[in-house]
Amino acid sequence: MDKKALIEKFENDVKKRSRAMRFLLVVDQMCNVVFFNGSQDETVSSHIGRKINGGYANVYEKSLCNFLRLLESKHCIKSFGE
Image 1 (cartoon, rainbow, N blue to C red):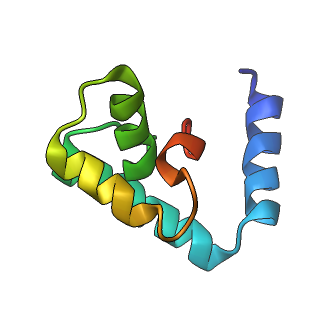
Image 2 (image 1 turned 90 degrees about the vertical axis):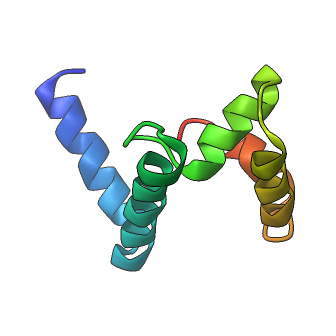
Image 3 (image 1 turned 180 degrees about the vertical axis):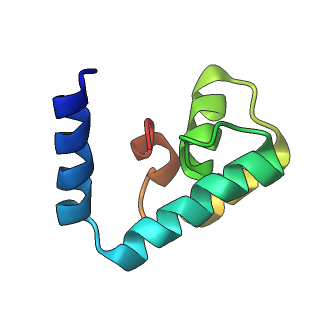
């Protein structure tokens, strides 16, 4: 990705999400690193959704995803790439 496209991506993200939502996203990504040894660029929901889709999620991860379904139907699957 070239520099101009990257800057445009960041500017669009600032317009799309409030400061509070961007902060919560950072906290979510930090939890993915600390508790799931995941990537700093991925949310917990995306990480678990990917593992469920791949067939190697553990019981704890599946339970967390089931809890998140109360907030949004198929939340973990929808969050791929976040």
